Each structure stands twice: as C-alpha cells, then as structure tokens.
Amino acid sequence: MSLLADLYPWTKALHVISVIAWMAGLLYLPRLYVYHCETTPGTTESERFKVMERRLLKIITTPAMIASWTFGTLLVLTPGVVDWSSGWWHLKMAGIIALTAVHGVLAARRRDFLHDRNRRPQKYYRVLNEVPTVAMIVIVIMVIVKPF
Image (tube, rainbow, N blue to C red):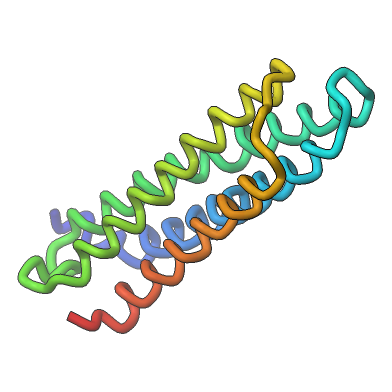
C-alpha cells in the first residue's frame, strides 16, 4: 500500500485525464445519435455516422471508462484518500454507476443504429444526453465540496 501512496499524484492525474475523455464520449455520442436519427438507413450519411459512432465508442469512450474505473479503484485503495465514515462517497459512487449505466445504454443504442433498428426519436437522445451532465455535477460536488 506504500507504493499506492507514492504513486498517488500520478494515479490521480491519470484518473482525471481518463474521466475527461470518458465524459467527452458520453456527451458527444448522444449528439451523434440525434443527428443520425435524421438520416435515412442505408445512405452514405447514415453509414458515415455508424463509423463515427463505432470509433468514438470503441477507441475513446470504452477505453476511457475502463481507465477511469481502474485509476479510481487504485485511488480508493490508497490509504487516507477516502474517509469511509463520510457520506459523500456513497453519492459519488451512485453518480459513477449512473455514468456506467448510460455508457451501457449508449453501446446498446449503437447496435440498434448499426443494424438500422433504431426506433427511438431524437428527443430520447436529447434527454439521455443530459444524464451524464447531471451525474458529473453530482460527482464533482461530492469530491470537491464533500458536503456530508
């Protein structure tokens, strides 16, 4: 555990970097879906969106989520980082689970678009786009302010 304490600044930096990349993907992917809804299945434009969505999810968003979870877990295991008697980390964890759930939903919706089976309207993706923002706000307030 001494090694984790020595590596704490690096672990924290890598965690922040990976969370930023994960959030970028979670905020941009639903926007792509909004625009993809406007296309006709099978068109060049629709196929272009499929490529963009796959690359964003597979090359950026999913690896960033894995890195966020990995570095976050290492931070939690670092002695003295979390005061387990405080309540803030419960709400932070709920926000992380919400982000992970949205990630799963976005991956499932990508499969719908991939097979030209999307039946959800633009409004669904516009609303879904707000969930990561709300979760991020909750997480940042819990980590920085630690209100309880």
